Image (tube, rainbow, N blue to C red; front, side, top):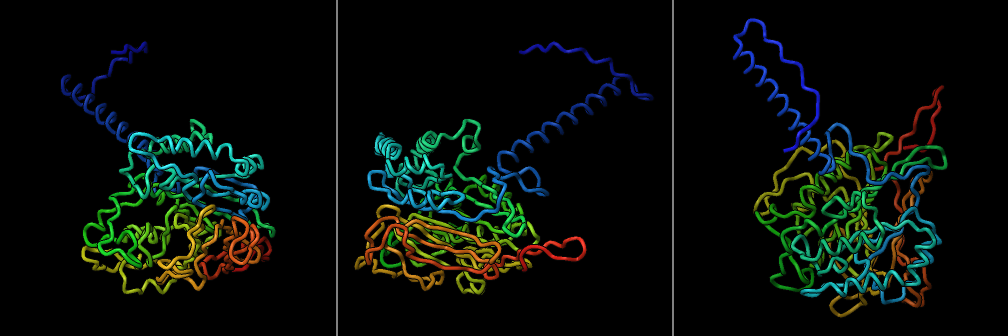
Length: 466
């Protein structure tokens, strides 16, 4: 036992009117209750900090806060083999985005039964890759997430025995400091907040949310009972089993719901696997219908923008080895498929129970998938060019060439642009490196973004009109 050298407290004064023994008992009970209350309070604060929240009243701070000027451009990509050429780094770095997001499969190094030597070798190869070395030397800000092939096992979730080793290699490669939040968390989820003034003097806030869909995902995907188009490998969970799934795990869900209390004009949500599609049987959120509904409901219930209007939402994803554009429309709230109605609770058997809709439902939400940077899937008889059914698909065909993605914001013109660019030379039609393969411009109004003007003294208005 430890002996502390502290000054002894003064003797307790007797409580007037009470017998001596009762006085002591009352004092002891009072001190005990105070001690218990302090321990419980400390425990609550500690648990809350670990989960990413402390109180429901105020949002938790972001993991990274970038201030000085408004967010303007993001580049991202996924699925890159370190042994292949990576010429895309130079044009990406020269375009000077605010950040490059590696949306999974940064390297390919699936571990063997008792060895992760392939993963070690893949990271070592990337570390000496001349193209990647150029990106690092240029000062390009890079943030990334692990998916499956850089996590040691294909398509794996929480049961992956190599995930802790893979995380350690990731942190070592990117030189993540010992006191960084990633060192304390079970997964690699992260938030970044960009805040600054636009060309017209208005302050705009962009929130970047990186989701870890591997570390806590459970159970394993259910294999398709009749593999074929639309059910190539897996099939969605149904009934009670659907309600027992978790894509993010309890801690990450609590963190995400806390982060969504932060006012933001634009929220960019990065998932290494696709979010909106339902026309294929590869990995995607709709394999867990109740989790997809929860994600859309959480985004719909987020805090308003920094100017008091609604936040716009865009998903970015990878994994598929094809590029694609998807769109969630407000009319999907009336779809007959329960999993696409985030304002409902899905009950066993697919029965849905209506819930009161909030005053500000989600407007249109776009998802841009960029994959692969180095080895995209070519068109085949099983996967003809552009073929993929589903209500979330847009008129833009699938992109089968190597590609990286871009998201850029024009705050003054009130538009957002989504693009896929050629990540290698000599694609279809002799495309040059950096040529646009897919491009769409979306108005703030379609995204539900209300960038209200601030009132200036004297009745004048400033900034962007709603």
